[in-house]
Length: 484
Image (cartoon, rainbow, N blue to C red; front, side, top):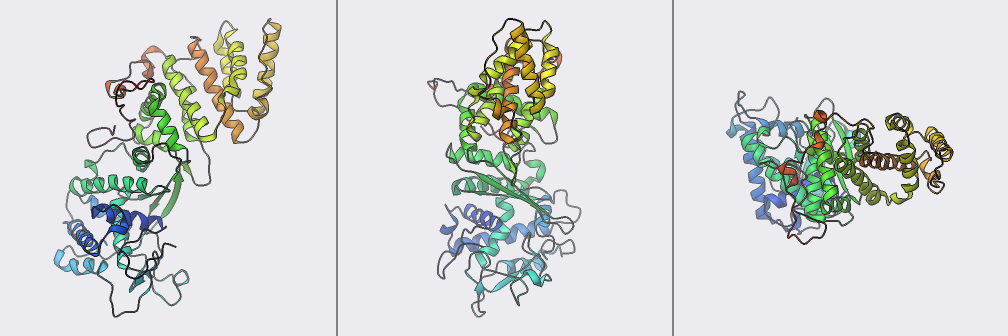
C-alpha cells in the first residue's frame, strides 16, 4: 500500500495512500520542514503535542459555545473517536490522557508488525474509530488475519490526525490532493494549513466562501508547476456513520499549459474572468471562483469537458459585445488545442459556410435558430449543411469545400461532439462580429457589455511582454478578496 520505511530511518514517510500522504505533508508544513522525510523525532513530538492541544481546545468547548467549527471538522472525520464523540467528557484533564495516547511513541517491548502504510514496525492497531474511510474492527473479514485493527506506526498515526490540517475541509467532508509533482502537493497543503488555523480561530465564517479544493489546486499548479505537463487528482470523502461516500475527480495533464496560456493572453484572460463572473451570477451559492475551477475537473473515468458545456450554455444567448464572445471563443479554442491537440483551423470552411448562409438572409435570427437546434446532432447537422450549401449555390455563391472536416464533424464519438461545439462557438463569434441580430440580450440585461470592473482589469500584461512583470491570473479569493 505504501513505501517501505526501514528501521532507523526518518519517523515520517511519504507513502502512496492519499490520506496518509496528505497528513505526512501536513506534518512537514507544521514542523516547517521541506519534506516529510526531513521531519525529526523531536519535530514529530512537537507536532503531536500541538495536535493534542488543538483537539482538546475544540473538544472541550462547552455545549453552548458559539464557534465549535473545528470540532465539527474533527467529528466529520473521526465520528467514533473517544476524543470527538458526542458523549465525550469536556473536562480537559479527563480527556488529555486519551488524546495523548493516540500519538504515544511505539512500545519497545511489544513486537511490531509492519505498518499498513509505510511498513515500519508498528505496535498499535487502529480501525474505523481513528482512521477515516476504514472499516470497523468488527469487520474481521477485511482486516489482516487474527488482528482487530490495522497496524500503524507513530508517524502514520500522527499523519492520519494531521490530515484535517492539510486537506480542504468543510463541516462534513474533506478533500486531499494527489499529484505527480510533490511541490504542488506541498503548496496545496500549505494553503490548507493556513486555512485550518483561521477556522480554529474564527470558525468557517473567517475563511473565504468563494473557494474550494479545485481553486486551491489550480493556484498550486500555477505557482509551482508552471506549464509542465502534470495532472492533479482530488479525493473527496465524507466519513460519517450514515452515508459515507468517496468521489475522485482529476484534471488532464495539459491543465498547466492551458492556465499558462490563459494568463499570458489578454483576450483569454478576459474570457476567463467574464465566464467566472457569469457563473457566479448564475449560482451565488457556489460562487464564480469555485464554479469555473470545477469545469477543469472531471469525474474518474469520465471526459465531461465541463468547460465546453458551460460555454455552450452562455453561447445559447450570446451577449452583443464582440469582445465578450471572442474571449469565450478563444477560451474554448485554447481548451481544445491544449487538452486534445485539436486543429481548429480545420473548421474554417464549415464556419464560413454557415456564417455566409445565415448572414445572407435579411433576418438572420431565423436561420441561426435553425442551426442552433441541430448544432449538436450529427444527422440533422449534415442535412442543414447540405441544404445551406445548395441554397448558396442557387444564390450565386461559391460555398467552401467542407469535405475535409465533415467525417470527424459528424462522427458520433466525443471528438465529433467537441468539434461541433467549437464550430458553434466560431460561428457565433463571427455573427456577433458582423453585428447580426441573432438574439442578443437587451442593453439593460447584458452584464458583459459593460466595461470590466477595476478588480478584473488589474492584470498589467500585454502581448509584447515589454510592460514589466505581469500580475498572475486570479484563481481563488483570499482573506482580503482574491489571490493574484
